[in-house]
Amino acid sequence: MKKFELTYKPFGQSAILIEWPPEIKLEILHDINTFSNQITTNNIESIVEINSIYSSLLIIYNNNIHSFDKLKTTLMFVYESLQSTTNFEARTWEIPVCYSDEFGPDLDLLSAHSKLAKETIISMHSKTKYAVYGIGFLPGFLYLGGLDKQLQFKRRNNPRLKIPKGSVAIGGSQTGIYPQESPGGWNIIGKTPIQLFDVTKNPPSSIKSGDFIQFKSISKNTFKELELKNGLTFLKLNDD
Image (cartoon, rainbow, N blue to C red; front, side, top):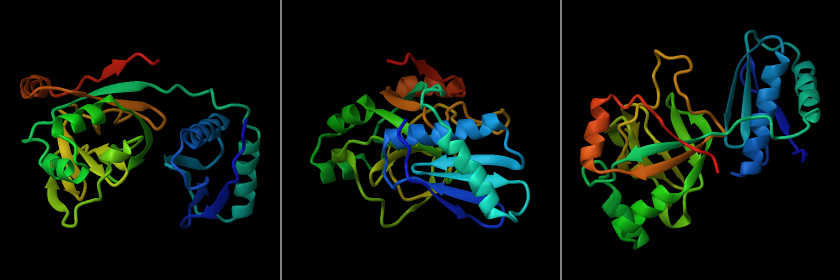
């Protein structure tokens, strides 16, 4: 198994930030997930939370860190002992999206920028299988890698104060889904009726880092039908 050159840094008073080379690559994503799973399996004392996004892993402890070098040595030993990246299950989720003008107010802007017809944009966006590289700035917000370069579009100069829950958007080289109503500067191209994040459940989201997302274009009528069901059911794809 290939080992990456990692850096370990204190992060605040009770966390350690581990960084891989700053690249968006599936190989790095798999390595991070394998490392994270091994830390969990080893049940290392005092670790209360592990978060990952793109090329970094944040290890949070239940107390202030008094011996960074000791904890770093423990983590380095765990990493060096990894044997393979095959001990985690990646699933693929199909997310229905309505790309109508009502739900995708920035489709026209993206069409003008990319010189692609809206129908072509919808087809390109929905045919790609996106890797989940992290979950964060909003609880349940999925950072997805794999957006076609022709669809990449800079964030809005004037962010919106209110983006509807379920909005599917593009920001730079990324695409993502807003799990709740919030301000934001990404370009909105559609909306899903599926509820991605529910604080009353444990875990709040079925999707995890390392999974894959594929969007499915649906009509407004289908959107309304799923919305009436509260969008509580994921449509799971069989892995290739």
